[in-house]
Length: 232
Image (cartoon, rainbow, N blue to C red; front, side, top):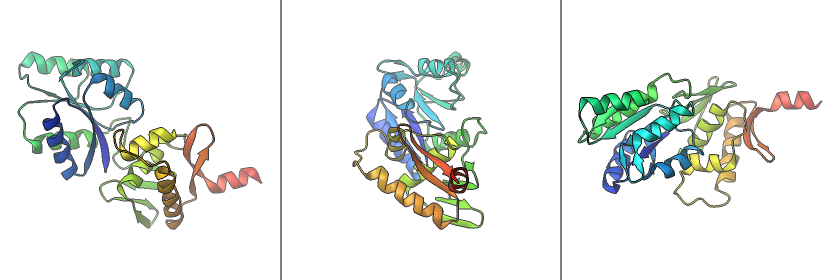
């Protein structure tokens, strides 16, 4: 299950969107302000952003402009009550990838998000691979050769982040945010338990990768055999 970001300050609208996305197998973290969203984006590399134009601290387009100025190319779907041609053009020129005027059907919104998730952006793959490991969110599993093992929702989010990091360390806080969101309460040892289960599942599918604790930096997928050879 992929996790996207939603910038929407209207609680009822946000709840409806989250429900529709969840029914389609897509999780969403909700942000009500641009400042809140930027703080979240610094911790989680979302594959898609769904942004309302009208929020308490500004225009969603301002957020898109800030992200594009930083060379963050994450696909963005803009939601707006405005339907004039110049508003749509302004959104696209600011760097948005798609534009959906309100009111809209939840089915169409989900279809637009799925289309952006399938886009071959340089940032993300819907089913990322690294060192022989393939993570398949739609199937709820990870594979190595002919072997596969199912992943719980939090485990899936953790593997997506670790595989996309391609051997680079990921901070503990970033892993917790990816697995459980920024608002959900997380027990102190929840990540340790989830990583322990993932380590066992990697062994179960005959992968030589291990989830290593890089002291002071976080966790990374490293090849156990190469580490052993280097140490000998």
